[in-house]
Length: 68
Picture (tube, one colour):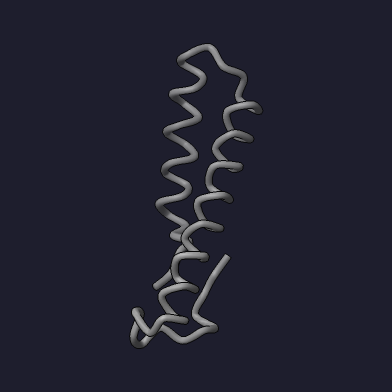
């Protein structure tokens, strides 16, 4: 299972940045905040997938299938 989905990420970055600008926030701040949240989300998803692999709860998922 791929954790990172480029098209979805670009859509979220674009729409959430627009929402932040409409709310009067600085573009650089909104982009930074979204990127930090995204990085933490990937880290957490990786942790869950690693636990599933180690426990045998994720059949067919090779160890090197992880993307950052």
